[in-house]
Image (cartoon, rainbow, N blue to C red; front, side):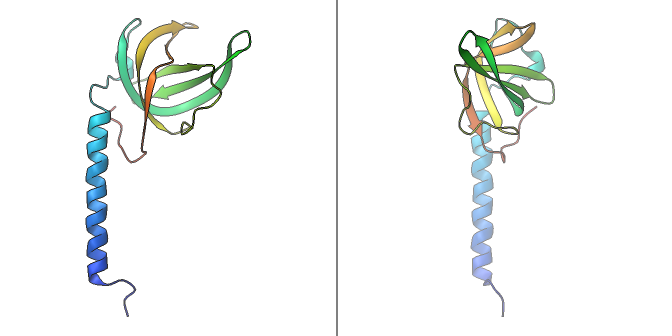
Length: 128
């Protein structure tokens, strides 16, 4: 005797297909207007997407901690700094993020300070 009926298997296949379509639509909306990290320039407002490759808590100034994240795509990486934060719920190594803000030079490298951000499900493919 079969564990699942034919109707149950068909319903599950439809649910999986609908879920895949919804994730594709979410990705299309969230990734609209995203620039490859390698094309970011100092003093420009950009929207980039990537995977969190490194995280560390770093002192920014006296008694002010900052969470520094290295966000990378296939073209390069950028440092994202959240001042006054030690952690942010949902952000961990491997997370997919979209960040938007002004690119600055911090410690001789390009960085975004306190950008707006959006977490993406891991099932949403990154464009670059």
